[in-house]
Image 1 (cartoon, rainbow, N blue to C red):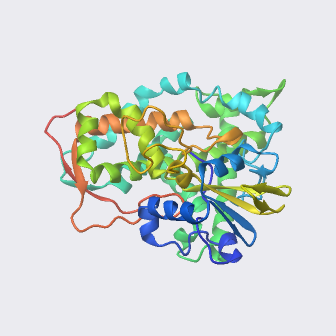
Image 2: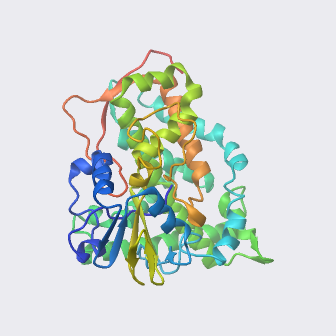
Length: 411
């Protein structure tokens, strides 16, 4: 999915540099579209001390596509990584070199070859609970599924799943794991220790693959060449670090958002059940409407201007993907969720040269999940009296009580 989270509102520059979502109303994280609309109506570009918030599609496009001014380098987001994550935190022209070798690995045809394995993973998870009346969708499906796909892709045993969950949460939300404030000394220390553990983990696995290559992505990285030379060990580690954080949490959040929406809109859910051919279009529309990664950050490397608003060198430029995807100036019927939408230029996977490397894999995972789930469990709902709580930034749901109703023997 898209690269990183970003603030939507902040009262001081300290908020932007600290937790950008610390003052977000929980209702906005649950349903941000009205807030996006209100922001665009008032100011499509919001200047603040040390940052600029972008809400319109044209303005967001400018920040994502003008990489000469708005960089995706390490100053945009600090995850306690010791080197730039490849290719996310590498700007052109070097960025193109890495994409040239990585894009074919994640090309549609390569990802299509994984469909059988991904389908089996979905069904194996559903097997565990299809006869029950209810589950916690977050802990029993949306969190487990993307991690299992990642393990298959990397040729790692499923027994490693808890390790990957720990690493992912320690990098993305260390303050939550430590029950402290965002960027507190405790959370930063924990995040740094987790980052170190990510490097150490992949160092060990790569050592084993060096001695005993397998038919997996890690072994492929070790023999991949760029401009006539093999990737260095550091380059491979920096690619693995990025894939870990980008491939797990965002897909989980997307599943949470999509299934929460469909649980509350039975007519559209029935469309998927009765005519699975609508799934590809439904997937794109739900990505547009829900936009689980609310925004991404760029760092201005020189003075610039967006829609007449000055941007100073060093400013954080916050591109609200969710607002751009619901911009009525760009999208017809922007506030209507339509599964028959034929043109859908959404930015849920970002845009410009840094557009999500794994978008084809994410689409495969989401499409298969929607297809297999609704084939086997066509009726489900949010448990009575439950108000789902979404995390800010990346809109995941940690506690998702779901009531199931499915015909016996659906598989």
